[in-house]
Length: 455
Length: 160
Image 1 (tube, chains in turn purple, brown):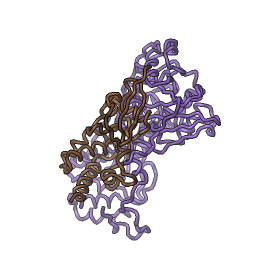
Image 2 (tube, chains in turn yellow, green; image 1 turned 90 degrees about the horizontal axis):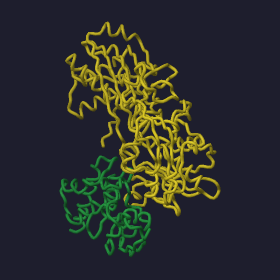
Image 3 (tube, helix red, strand yellow; image 1 turned 180 degrees about the horizontal axis):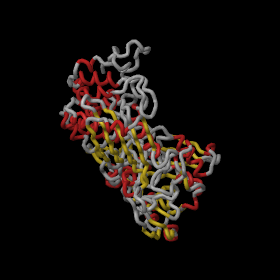
């Protein structure tokens, strides 16, 4: 690894004695010897296995649930439905005042996506739990489903989630998160060219090698130890506390070792119901997603649609940008209102554009709830806007890297969401990339600096 | 449910257990014997995290019935180190940063060991082929391939 210390040499205070040096990871010796303890490596006498009965429909009313045959299945200890959950309707981000509570731990009267948890079965063995789950009878009245964001936003579309009342998240700014900067229509009117393009993506599954799960042990002091692979320990602890109506002091969460997460393990899904099962049976409980559940049930990255309209001058300046972004939350919010909001701030990209108009919608559909994944809210947007940048450069016959130098943000530039740019290094990164990739640009661009325009 | 006896050698030690007929070798090792170094990533033979060596052959323990291993000699990653001294492959995985979350590492190391046992100086292509049944979602595979090649070089230098 080569460090270029000549950049920003006047403001550097560090001597970078760690960066660039190999340092052994503290966890690697455990990994290579098989001694690292993942949550599922804990085995306790009398441990029960939890299996979920899941909705086979995208959208349906539950007329009745009959667990009588399942209860008689050999090895079954307990069967849980919505009425067993102390505070069944929750939403993860309520901890930071982002409501409303819109998701059920176990479905109550309705299912809103194919795969939604309806009934939890606890049995002596995984096999008994699975067999008993198959004996739970749920009578559904199938309802019209909406699986497409634009369909969901049309008047008269089936309402996915009654806790919202409409198929989009209602921000304090209204039906979408908005950024308004300058006069975008005047910008378009004065532009030499206008390019409007639409980009879209499918949901993406993280597919960690270790599936989501937890092992819960009821302790003699009325506390519960929860061994979990959550990526969000305190979100999970606090939401479990709310869902179970149990003080946090009763919950001892043990985690930190995660067999791959990538954002896929930040939801609060397995722990509350496993702790409830341990409380009601007095036995340790293991709830581990099968590979099929990991792929089908755990939250993916949201599907997104991004429509970008840019006004550009022949000399390479982008003078106006209008973006409409749609984030498919699926049936429940989880982290998607936050993801869509991040997109609103991000869509101008690392470029200074004087006239910007952005609307980002968080849309509810009868699809698997989406949530966090590596840079969610901006990753798909980055794909869209960098493809758009290449197309714009081609449109005006300009080198795509030089085109980015012209528009790159620099210290002191005001971003569209009104955060002044500080500590920018895009110019310098592109100069280095130009050298490393042997993609030469004109000397005036190699002489530019992030410090100030005209420098 | 009727239990069946199984008896095998695990990493040089005699083991005997009564298990439910149909128990996989993976579950027998993890839940009965207490060797949790093989991991259950898919339980359907697609991820390789459960890889073990049975009588010198690479096997997916999630698709192997424990009762078919009577009398066999089984090796797992937890048995590779010689006292406190790491196996060449373990050392190489450390040195080349071939582990991140670590969940695939025991299976990767076992698959690599079977390769090097049969092919002490593999080509890069042979390493890729040998690891093709093991999924890693963190590293992008390159550091793992380098680890196996490094271990092979290290072995041949020690032998010379």
